[in-house]
Length: 176
Image (cartoon, rainbow, N blue to C red):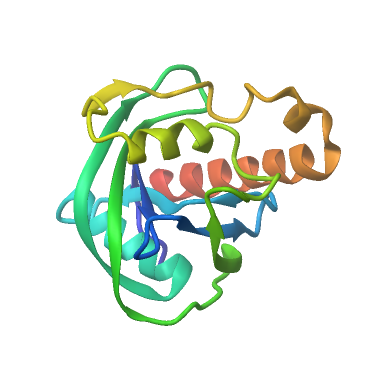
């Protein structure tokens, strides 16, 4: 049985290499973009930190500890939701693919993949800034701000299909 989500809240986790020159990213299966591990907070999660640890392990195979909360992004528009952004550190495990993940690997901050979720550049800057405000608006409209995304059918069509599948599963789960 699929867990019900709170629908309004999500978590994302950034993990740096020991020298803080690289970050761990996953390649999402639905839209083929690189992203931070994360997802919706389930009703069974005890806290946002608990959700972050669970999502990170589900999507990467690594168990982590939460080092700090970087920011709490408030949503605007239909493509974003309240998002807790954490910095984590790997405790154990090995990279493992899941039904949501095509690839798990570290990328140098100087050589990030071209198909990184567009707003994540701003979020990486927030993670590197020790004075980042703890509460702030979502950096940019969640997927739509980069028009290359909208005009690329190899990304946009799977994104819409993924959103439709998520919406229909959510609607079906909540109507039971």
